[in-house]
Image (cartoon, rainbow, N blue to C red):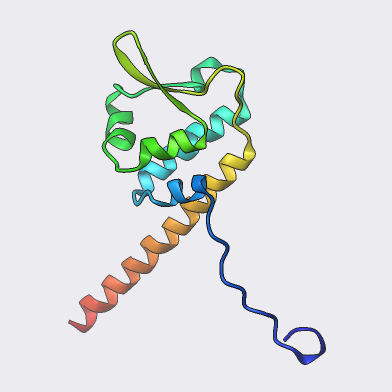
Length: 132
């Protein structure tokens, strides 16, 4: 109960920003985990070149990011850029640009929301199986 016996106001949830919407559009938990790892490493060690460049031709990266709808778009929205070099495509954090903990928090929020959705769906599927 709120102040003076009044119930606190229930405000509608805020509309997500473009970056939040791009990350929340991904429905693969493995992909969101990979994006979190890449963004976190870049934010924590911003001058380390190995964290600022991701080769999209890498089989694991291709499977987790390249084949999931919206994953590359989310990375671009977070501040990465697509670049062609040496006959391959890369996701690169442009020179002079740094990712911060704000981007990490956006990905963590999307990961937490997706984890909750997966658990709720699993719980729902279990109930349907028991009743059916």
